Image (cartoon, rainbow, N blue to C red; front, side):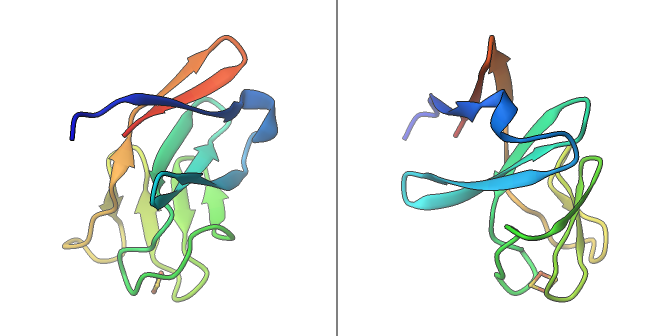
Length: 102
Ligand code: FES
């Protein structure tokens, strides 16, 4: 399947320092607004698969509520356990709209 851009929401739906879950095809994705930039990733924690929907946002790092693993959405790396990664997706702001390539 080739990647394509999809409109997710308007930028004002995700205030600075927060995140929100969206359905994208068969997948749930998490959009994080760090204050400077938007980031998109899978909404599933790579540790044991819990949802990151209510995770704490610190800049572009999300902390999973289940066991506290930290995920850097700028590169998909897990900061807690180096072998783990989370899928991340390119984000573009087009006017008032947020688009994600997946
Ligand atoms: S499932 Fe996220 S830290 Fe364990």
